[in-house]
Length: 85
Figure 1 (cartoon, rainbow, N blue to C red):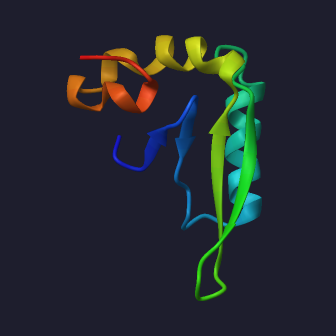
Figure 2 (figure 1 turned 180 degrees about the vertical axis):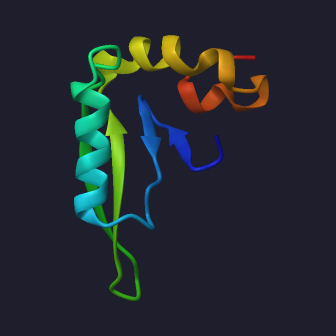
């Protein structure tokens, strides 16, 4: 619950994963029949030059994501899904 934030849609901070691992995670989110969550990969370069990869959940998939995870998220973290406590 801690590695992500909401800015119009949910962003997952997968900074310690490789690009290939992030693409695999995105593929699983989209192709699992009961997930069907669309996402994009985001590249960020740290000041030290290190490249970090993140996952941005598509706005069109936010309802699906919320329905899948809301029961497992503590109310104090609802804001990361764009929800209020």
